[in-house]
Image (tube, rainbow, N blue to C red; front, side, top):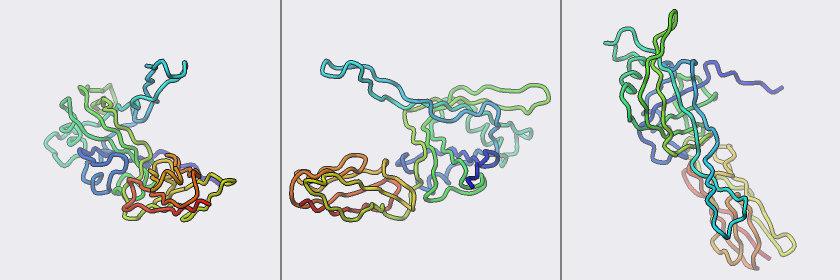
Length: 249
């Protein structure tokens, strides 16, 4: 029977100042950040994508109803508990206050849903969502018989990778490893995994000879002419590329 995962105690939020490849952050990069999870209230919790901008600026050669995808949109508003003892620098509440009390702080919010408790460090092969943000002016949020909190709005900075795979020490694994195409069987499909996770649609595919075989961004190989070609498969979460040998008869 399928088992639903509840959100209670299963969300981790890190603040990370630097990520070399946001599409696949390393465990070291994430764990060098600050685990803010214990300081964040459910009240007003907002962190996630909300679609993309539409670029409706057509050329005369475009179809009349064509619309291109622009920057991804996402919302990020978090309420942080305030520390009563403001001299306690070890308190995650005070650390969050010091970090976000000023505007214009740039960095990444990295979120892990499920997979591990918030006290666990980020690990290779986990899925995380990465949002590049800039802090807006914080506001105090409190009312009677409630905790004193600070609300921080984060301004999107055009970089969003949801369900990105944390960098691993293993290569890509494309299947099949070899492929034979003919004039009557012109198409083949490469499916790619990293650490057992399906990364087919986030991998890149390159043909060594496009006069013999081409490959799409989704890993679909197309026969062009008799001969052979090698498809190189890469993924930012993998430690190395892999190849698929294609025979075209």
